[in-house]
Length: 128
Image 1: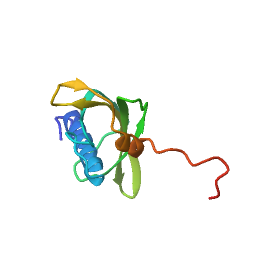
Image 2 (image 1 turned 90 degrees about the vertical axis):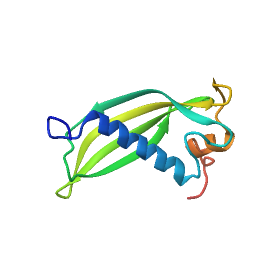
Image 3 (image 1 turned 90 degrees about the horizontal axis):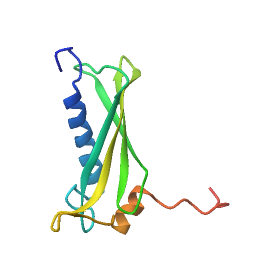
Image 4 (image 1 turned 60 degrees about the vertical axis):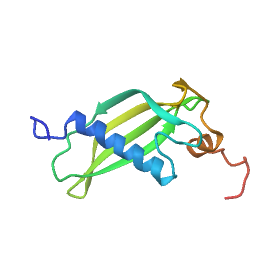
């Protein structure tokens, strides 16, 4: 909690980091290893929509956009569940770049990781 008695911006960034780490771990990856390289954060943006308070149960949803051969935007939707009501807390983005920590250079996103964050669409006319 910050001086305004609500969730502070530093805590939001930490929660985003934790959500990203959990997402990667759920697919047996880390920020240092996504199948031949790591990830490095290029930028961050947080747009606050409401206040979070001590005791709030938070839900953080992640999805990827702006996917290229070397980078992608990881989007976060942070909601509080308070009194059986969903309250928008923040929408956020981290620009993530594939990075070779040995050579200290930007590199290509490994194909398997690229397929994880940008799975191919089913063929048109496919039965559901």
